[in-house]
Image (cartoon, rainbow, N blue to C red; front, side, top):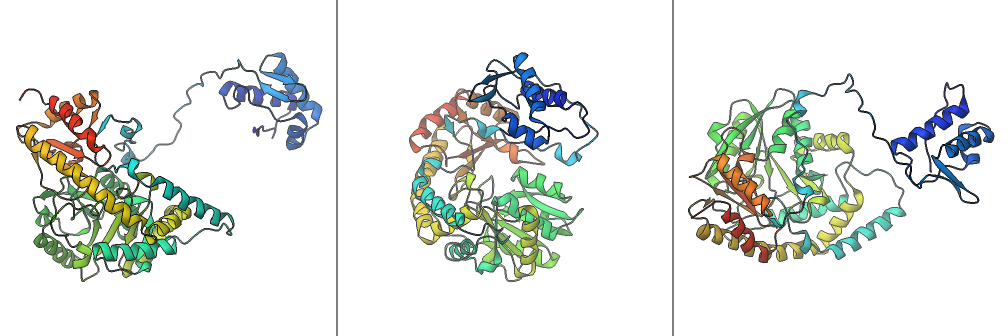
Length: 472
């Protein structure tokens, strides 16, 4: 066991070794039953006589902190327990005020009996065995490699696989060089913002929308403006002048679920050209479509190179994978890659290589086809039940894409829906209030995810949720 002992500037070496080992035991850094370093080894490391260490160990033994066993070594006494540490002073440092409203996520620390929270895929149906084989293969390959850092833009095979995949599945025309692999969507937005905006620049986001993105942009010094969403998507006429960047989810607006109309898409592209602004298109879960014609991404309609396409594998595979990507126009491609380099150099190479092979071998496409059928059945069940059992309380926003539906509560207040959510949680049902995604005008309603809940659990989960609204 390595334990740090500092003798720099100390006069009584025996007393210092004793005192610092004793404090490590009291603090719990040396835990009950753990072995102390052999006296000869510690003496050599500290450049002192072995007798100096022996005296310190003997004193610890006499006071009951350690026990020596012949031929085995010296161990922390089993009944020695750490004392509560005194609270340290706050210190002279002060964090920027921008971090005060940021709350670390804790909701997913507990497992829900009936999981209706949005943004979660079904991890139980993921091909874990196949993925483990791929990861093991790549880890073995890396064990024999040189062990150097990779390119910030990502693993070459994965960039090529992503470019091929989005070209076929979403008609996003790009070359592998246009792709930068990131740690999910949030880092994708982070590196884009670092490449394009400076302190005081105006950035527009959808309202309602995804709260962490707003906070991320503010932390970079941007002036974040919330723009309303209607039945056709982002209200373009509400965009303020001199907006530098607009973030949208046109294929499946988060969280309302509406799809941006073609007219509104063309209007947004024309506005961006007139304002010389950039658009970030977050296509987070459009792989799952349950009817209707596929909607062309903004990126496909863009002829001026103003749309930056962002995707993620968190919904299609696993959130814990933490892999996403940016398809950037050539004009800012190098800046995005440099921002990624300064952020964390590159994402996990083993996971990237495994994902590249998973896509190339057809495993990803097979998984998407399987899950699309599963999610479509759950989507239909949830929508049908909301239309019948919740008709007096909720109005479902039409949607045929993704892993959640939104339902407005036109006859209830935000406070009433918050009470419903708390009652549901007490009954083992976890669901999100729509108001938590709103900035200016909180909406009363629910966001109901069906990705992580088994199909057979949905009826009982919704029955319990319905009971939380009270009498019919």
